[in-house]
Image 1 (cartoon, one colour):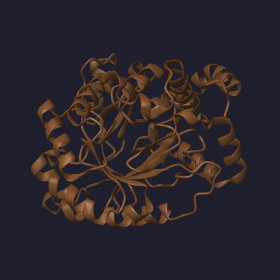
Image 2 (cartoon, rainbow, N blue to C red):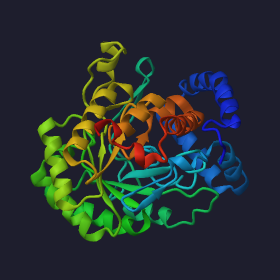
Image 3 (cartoon, helix red, strand yellow):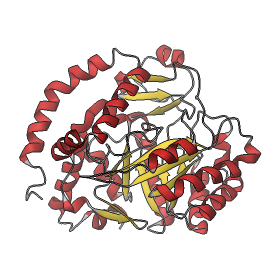
Length: 377
């Protein structure tokens, strides 16, 4: 471990990144979003499976700050920045995420049955807002295929926790949702480090109705019954404050390991992208900086409600070290990114890790866990 929170190699990579990544991003943005996503996913899968490449990438990008390590719900995390669900929908690149600097990753969303998702185009960029809109519709190979991928060996040099994010199969009636979630949890639970129950995507009809406590309780109870690993629930930023409180209380009642807050939003407020362009895109979940404020509000409300009884995972609009540090001080034990990774690249991820380590050192904290929720103390 380097004595400095920002090693020389990180400073050099950051400088190179500022010069090279913007034009590279401009080129990638000339390719349809879903096509470039598949290309990058294949590249990451190859990197994670090729020993020499895997080692070189890990040596360049994986953080080595011991101060970032923490334990949440019994799982050891080398750093708090994780990949949010939605990128690795088929668990193809599970061995790449730790090598490029993530402290953990969620695969999925995985449904009980395979499904193609919604019609294309279904992924859209809003460069003026550094945001994305998606209406993917849980396109994935299904729980059985994902389980086979999770069962494959994950050699080092950096093996990080992998969570399985599970959702409802679109063709399964709402009244059969409990069995659908149970099926996925039974298959994926033994192979993952934790399971996240997703009831908050706006792209599956009727799914968000399952966030109501009366509907959510039996689903979570069923998953807890069959999953031998920690179980978390992921909620939407569009919930009312009262509903956020209700989910928090339910999490404590059932003994959930954590709450992931928040998913994408159906709101279109405050965008710099012209309204006509946004309207032309149509329905879908908005991610990135536009959801930042509400995500932070929900985090603070959850922390005030449950304290350290439930682990809080904050996701939504994290762009800078300031954003990440604010979430930790507000009570987040873990963070997740997706859209910021698209716009910033893997070196941006390294900058977040280096920046958090520097903040911890400057504030005199012995480790990450000492800083969690410090703003509320």
